[in-house]
Length: 71
Image 1 (tube, one colour):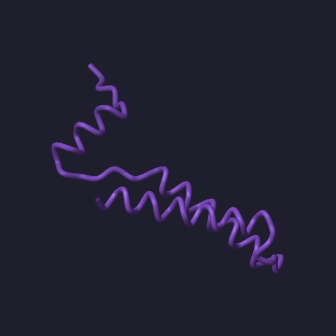
Image 2 (cartoon, helix red, strand yellow):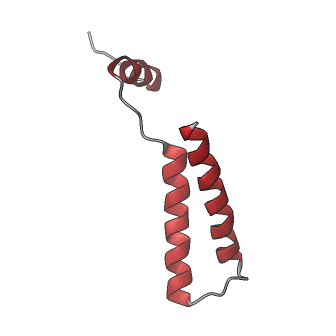
């Protein structure tokens, strides 16, 4: 008999062992911010461009998410 691994099984197993799963939302935000920042640096974009404004929004979302996780 083969055991099927599901997200629910992983969560249950991690909780019983005291492990923390990767925060995929946080990783996605950080990845998008890093890619945008690299683009802005390469192109020398100023702070009034949509890319730089998105970075500012991502910074706020990251701060909110990290604050939620801590407390």
